[in-house]
Length: 397
Image (cartoon, rainbow, N blue to C red; front, side):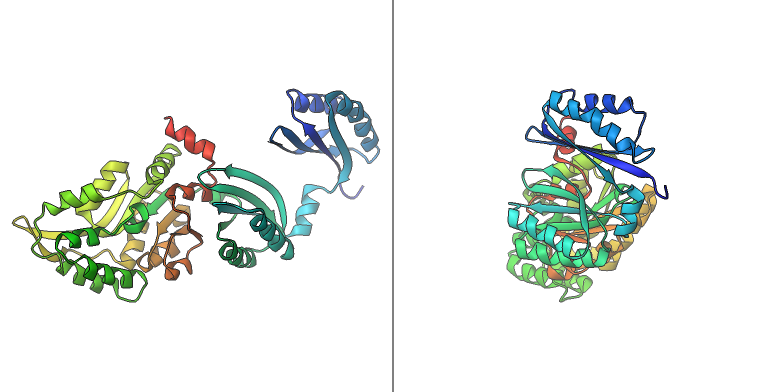
């Protein structure tokens, strides 16, 4: 024989204890090598696939004979057929597989159909589908082979917009599982508001500052210049305002769960902000973060001067901070994840191993690896392959 011969056994029916053990006990009497196994139970229904190496095509009849009576005894259907080897199948499909993470609230059948059709049209194949979560969002993880990264991302990105869902595409392999550092923007990412606008509200200039902030986040203004302009509006505020604003800060839904789960799984976590240390230091303590970088407002005799101390943490500064955190954590940039919402985060998002745009401005979505448009920050965990069960386990620790 030029190629090895394999048999594929497919078991379907009502799941019950002992089915898998009985099947492999029957195969053990034939002394066959097991090459692959996949099993899933959906609402009490079993689907079990087993690939075994045959010494010759004649062994196929022996396998069929062994399992035919077994299937009747167990009340399941067992189909046996010749199958190509894994190497042959991969040769036909060509490209290395990808993990495609799909999130929806809701995730409709039409959206799943469009995704499957899009992958098929590219010549790709869905090898496996796993549900990572059913609440607060439905999340499916697809293992896709036979298609290149660029057209897969382009096709699925268009579908995500059409069906109001979020889709992330990552190559399978060690790089995906090796992420170890996650860094967040703060304003409108880790927290729901903009700290400088909260401060400006106490000076009676919130609307003015908010307009400049919005333009800067869209990428219409130089961040450093816009920051100086906005900070000038805070001149004369009593430094006690920081205590008031810290009390006003609201974490984005899911932020605590996200950081707690990441820490439980061994990740390092940090923040990098165009905001101010007088508030971000509180977040570091509150969430137990490992790294932080932010600007510092000048205070003289208990009063804000309307100036920033030292070098401004702007768009390039955020990317620099991410690299500094990675060095301190002893990880490569490929092992980093960055999350942000505005144009000020573009350099950081582009530099990270995985850049995630969270409810972001168009300028950032264009450069991010993936976009998350759900209101829950902990949905980021699904992009890292973390299931709802693992999240709940971290909550009990």
